[in-house]
Image: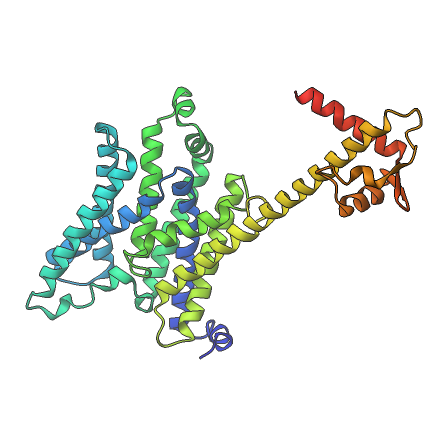
Length: 374
């Protein structure tokens, strides 16, 4: 099945429709909430919490003995919240920085989770097979109830973000000022963290523990390149996340040997690379274009200022001068001479140049600006 056939079947085939809708919703909520993690400079938070959820999945299975996805996700949620609480506790009560706390919790919980999975695999119980899908994700196991759960969590998250929009914006950009206004910054911080944990937990079945942090951060990182507005960034991140889910599912469905989760993450990475290169404000391409434009403008300004110094020694500023006078000037090139002529700043007649009144005034203005800046 190719991609065109996939899009023609997605509305009629239950499995394709369920997986596509689920990955789209997951991408949207991850992009929306991942924006807060990126702006709070807690990019490792998603990685730590997703890994912290693993022992919760294993313990939930050991307690219940069943692979019911809702039960396992509840275990993941509890474990993820404990991990997030420990991260905050370590940062608050010790001299360790947040990145150190994140690394400690990530390695501790993931190691404990892998130990439990190894123990489960050796149990004489055939039901334990398949828990490894939470490591790498298995979107094909999504059912309609899973998608409804994602939609409910997304709706709750959206309502909370809208209700606390002003407070979240203040907290993101100036936590001390937010506290001085009387807001409970600890509660707001816990609320954002809880929403991020929810988004991570519902995505474990689709993308897996290993790749979940990329799903959380990639759409937000891509959106950050296009805007300075928080609202626009969250909207773009949700769009990028949803598109990553849909396109990743389409590419995966078109091949029998491609896992959906990794493909979704790779598509999200494509959005990041594209944004890093082509975004008008921060993109590498436009930054390079602006650099060369500024360099050429500086060259023109230097040449025009040099001509101005020569012309002002004569009563008639349009007095012709030989082009050879410019040959030893560092900013002069034949290209810059043509540009100045095109701007009507100078006139060129054979091997002679002369400054126009417009060019003289422009050069004098540059000279005044330079003196004012000094």
